[in-house]
Length: 300
Image 1 (cartoon, helix red, strand yellow):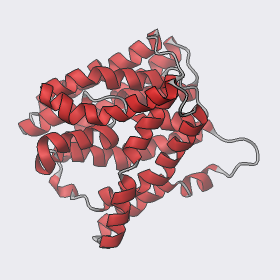
Image 2: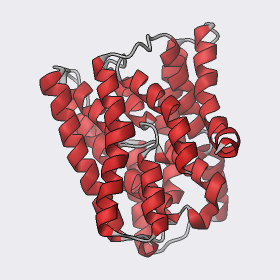
Image 3: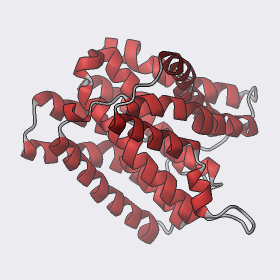
């Protein structure tokens, strides 16, 4: 457990801590971090996502296990959104992103690299399946719905035009088309995208750390509720549902491990892009990231 924590988990978590430190001493400003977040989201993520989706072997995944995982996401998301809106009276878009933070795990930028460090490519197939689902379906859903809920100021391009020119959605769609058509990406293109895509995770986590450095991390009822739903309710729901399904042990254990991961930084990235308040969303991500260090090391 200690070796996994020090050699596989903390090195990934360190970028968030570095951003927090440099933001605290005013070496990097919030405006600079916001720009870095936009670059990571719009520029570095597409080359990370496109080859991932284009090269997936969907037949290797357990469709029944993924279906159970998706149903658990829908159930908990609905409950979390209603809690944020009706009990805590948060604005619709903030409630939407807080609910997203309870079920959208940081698989692509956090769990995926950690799982590969611990288990290797073959053993991490279940995690890759969740990464594929979250990248191709869940992430697209939240990009589209967040944009539609947020709207735009008068004179801004219509929703269909904004979404059609979103580089992340374009990368997801192109990856799916290449995958279905069985068209391989040229090696030079793969090399370039691999080189650029490696910057997405550290840059996003670094920007999050900088933003957090200027905010209070005091635990409010909203933060405690969202964090508890993410770290306790979601993995417990996945564990219970998969125990009824009884898939292979590797799939059961790694899906539970992934569900116990921290809230995805994408909820924070979308909040910044759309000007949504982050005083609750950002602390949820940092607290779940911090507290999940122990649970991830133990489950791994």
